Length: 186
Image (tube, rainbow, N blue to C red):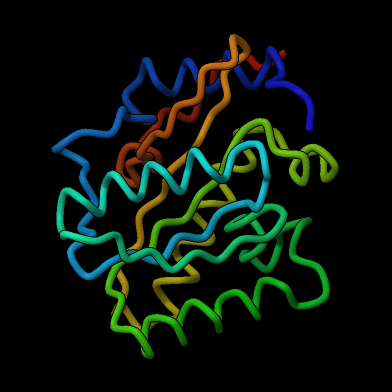
């Protein structure tokens, strides 16, 4: 739904410049050797790009991709209890499904996605900053619900204003250490 706002574009570019949104590479390659659970928005204009990226990553670790996707409008942003997208117990159901998939299939890695622009986030009036905050809250809740069995990473997919699509790793350490002063997002 829509295009990346100028404010979100400036904000995400500032995170890239500060090294918080990282290009995918060897340094932040998430282990896909046992396959991966991905929790992403079901956005029909973005999901193929997200899924394709994980097929590529899986093939760096194993002969055949092994991806267990959970998709819904808003993806991982549904999980936090205080998320405007977590309605009718959807977040709790998603947490239970992730834990069950890990237990049944032996997955040890989960990747949580946010993306921009996102129609569900736009309807809830969530900026890219708020989406990333919710993504890290979701990470904490997934880790807790799995009893620490799952390694959880956060990725953010962006369709830039020029139409170029990119997937970024978001370092939790860098995100949490960021300066309290944030770039202006007018």
